[in-house]
Image 1 (tube, rainbow, N blue to C red):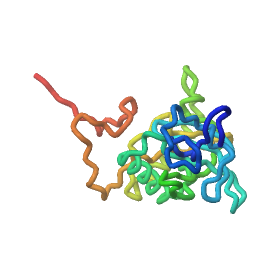
Image 2 (image 1 turned 30 degrees about the horizontal axis):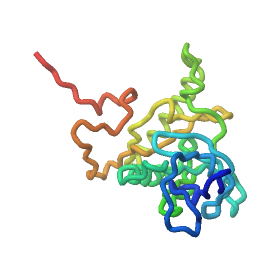
Image 3 (image 1 turned 135 degrees about the horizontal axis):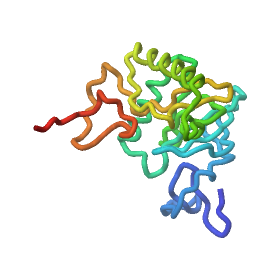
Length: 220
């Protein structure tokens, strides 16, 4: 990739710019996710940028082996610390352990130039946050999607996995009106006793936190 009037971008997932044959690369002033379009990661060809999340970028890509379109999620440059990588791995492990029509399917997790990525099914539609009107949902749709989500969560719980971040942005509604649960990055395995948040730190979205996760102090 070459910026007009500037140096070559060493790698679409890198924050360094400079001549590919020069070891003295310097930090890029700005990273733009669209620069990945047209590049190849493993056997996937990046087609276009799809969305941005709290710690990652999601792209539409073509699986050149199976000739199908998929979604690929990368940890955004500058956020690939140990905590982000553990969350990324947790999402892959939790979602890939489940097989349910209302949970987004994970196909693969791998690394490219030390940058982890997650390959999942490409969904056509919008998340609940985007389609929910100010007046609320129709009762028929609300009940239909609530039943689908509850059944998916029941399956996850039966496998010892607690999502912990159910909110409108993590509920995707396909064009065929099927609900899909996304983002198991904050999921907890019932057998995992290693996660101990630091004092004052929360691992859930506060506005959508379940009551059983909250600590209530009663004063006289």
